[in-house]
Length: 334
Ligand code: ACO
Image 1 (cartoon, rainbow, N blue to C red):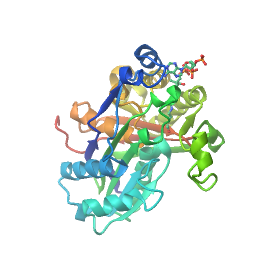
Image 2 (image 1 turned 45 degrees about the vertical axis):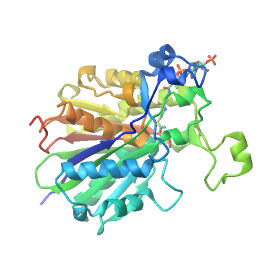
Image 3 (image 1 turned 120 degrees about the vertical axis):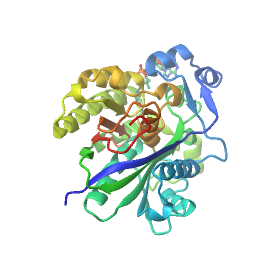
Image 4 (image 1 turned 180 degrees about the vertical axis):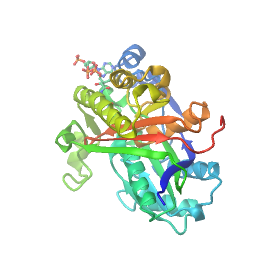
């Protein structure tokens, strides 16, 4: 029997507090016109003191399990994709496993930065299709507001906080995650980096003084990489799945910047009507971005049983990943 892995539950969690471009113009020398014209972002959600990567991950996971009508006791594995974990260790996934009551599950974190959820889909798919596990909760959760430098106008306007989760299960119904592409180019590591806090530069008075515990980015180079990587990976999975761009019902790219999304969609040949965009409301929520967008696409009836979906995540590493998914789970509109 050939088994497929398919998404049977989904949920998202976003902080209630939002920060608009006008709010940011009071913090740094920027304005709404610059931010909207360069990025398409209008507002982003910012975690309050008691909202963290862990709390958002738990909320999203519980919603995904409810949506799938499954109990946490059914879960074999919890994966949390994040670059802003709750602690250096233990893993955020172990905290979530305990909090949601997944008492017979394994748990680990996965760090592929903003591509973390897309990498996690590939990992979960492997576990399921090798028949090692039946039910996996995959969460993308990040609180980027905790690692951006709120005095650096070139990065602080881009990011937001949030989490999304999916429940993946083994099925003998054809469809589900049909094609996967994982890529990395570590030579681009310095383009997007948090230098301090790891083994190279442990946190010290000096690293705090020079601000090297904050995210730093070469925006222009990352922009160029993002358009090329998104285009190439999307085409790779589309070709592998045997689809043409006309057949793609919905493209769900990483929500970093609307200009990156538009440029990649044009190169792939997917009209913007078939592209899901919510970066205007949430900014770049890193590993949360694709599962949050997936949840909203389902809420807005943009996905039905049989829909052909392409997702692409990209981020620090540099790392990027894509999937071709044929939707099989019942949705509100099917
Ligand atoms: N408001 C006003 N001016 C600004 C701002 C701001 N918020 N930020 C930068 N500027 C200024 C710069 O200082 C620069 O001024 P100068 O010419 O006087 O030096 C000018 O605007 C142009 O700066 P650029 O960086 O060249 O602007 P660009 O058009 O490239 O846009 C941006 C910058 C939006 C960051 C773009 O490069 C981008 O989107 N890059 C990709 C970022 C991204 O997606 N990163 C996430 C990857 S995923 C992950 O894993 C985290």
